[in-house]
Image (spheres, rainbow, N blue to C red):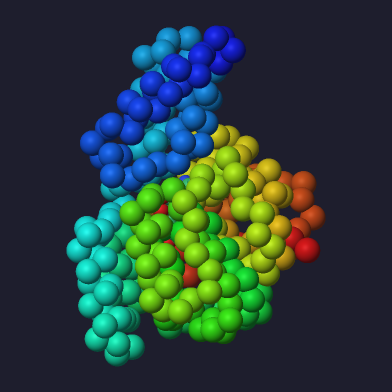
Length: 275
Ligand SMILES: C[S@@+](CC[C@H](N)C(=O)[O-])C[C@H]1O[C@@H](n2cnc3c(N)ncnc32)[C@H](O)[C@@H]1O
């Protein structure tokens, strides 16, 4: 049953307010576009409002993924200022490492930092413009990325305190670019770039909306789209490699894009040459 036609703007606003008030999301200032998209979608799928609300809450939990970890952002802002005031590259790197360690996706890459990004650029070349889509804490790997100082780096996430901290970091590092607070599924970035990174999120996009990835990939104006998927479960107990490869094949089925794989210990990167 499709209920969207009967849902008033007032009702949507009421739901948005309710979701924003949930304790674990209160400080995150989640984009309206995200909340509206989930509400409209779930109302169209469920005949009962309470079932729709439950489904929205389940999806939101999976999208925001608070269980992957966060620093205390107020403390992190102060630590960032202290590291840059100290001014030694070592202090800045130590601060960055603590940010990378605060979130499961980036924590796994710490042992590989010295080789991870150079292996990507070996395939794509060094980007002049880089998009980091659903970035999480990855921008704090900047000191290990080996990018030219003129590279413009645009990072996207829907978590406001994270986006603010990354902007503070970019400004203090003299990095050209910025972090942007946006739901990239509803509003795919339109900045032209040589390379876009979309790491450890494609499987969640498909859980949010089956079939969401391909139109999203098509909408991006980039030469190289690097999509990674985790190949071990969070607890490290399950091998997901074949499953993730099948998922990418099903997403890309019918496309003529050339794809090169890079396999790291916990992560498989599909380097998709779009143009
Ligand atoms: C699993 S983490 C991956 C982080 C990073 N890409 C990495 O691999 O280190 C997912 C991140 O994507 C963000 N995210 C999820 N859906 C998003 C969307 N539609 N638009 C923007 N950011 C999104 C979340 O807030 C979270 O920071």
